Length: 186
Image (cartoon, rainbow, N blue to C red; front, side):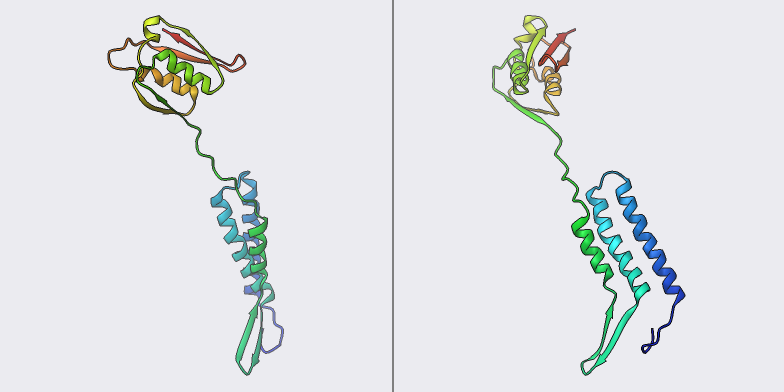
């Protein structure tokens, strides 16, 4: 636009259409993926307003005014409006949860049976053993063990016996409908 006369500029119109298409594709891409991660939300928060700002500038242009303080140019502000809407209307992704883990500290003198019962009770389960008594009375080394859950902690428990304790390979079976863990030695 020049000195109040209206003219149509095809290159700017085509650029505006292209950027509007980019904004629409980015919008649908962001929601078609099913989960709006923090990274995708960040990209959408900047792609949508920037593309719409350029598109608004290409479609509606700008207005210039001259005065005693100089020339003042006011450009299309649709981009800011879209950014503002994007900021408030794009859903915030839920913060990622820390992986579930379970830590257990054992005192000196704790037997395999006692440690396994403590782990199972932490989850509200009981435990049954199909192992020989020598293995069940083996002492667990003192210290802290950490695992993803009670079942994994029970599986790792056999490797935390003190050096001179009898060892045995075993399987841990979780029976949730009975609220029971079963340890079967092989």
